Image 1 (cartoon, one colour):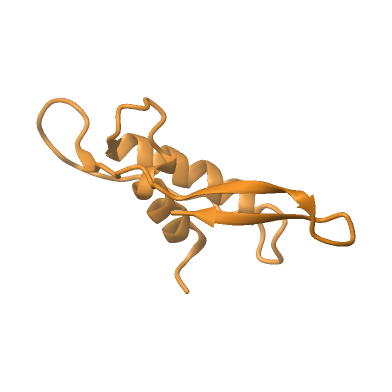
Image 2 (cartoon, one colour):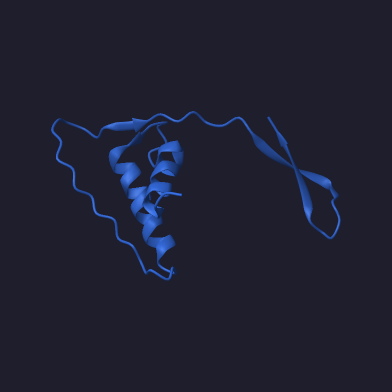
Length: 94
């Protein structure tokens, strides 16, 4: 129920924004991810393209880590047996 930016920001914190692949999501990674996804996903909406703004005043060195998401253990394994009408079935393995 949140805004497009909020939805993408949360997805980023869960790991999608970890562009450095170091297992940590920083402020810059999370914002860059949410910004790009918000612009892309709002372009075709009736309200028009949204352009988020970033304004933060902080001190210190380096980029602040916001999350360290753990990789999920679930995976999908496609079945080799036809599931009818040409659609493959997938069974989740936890």
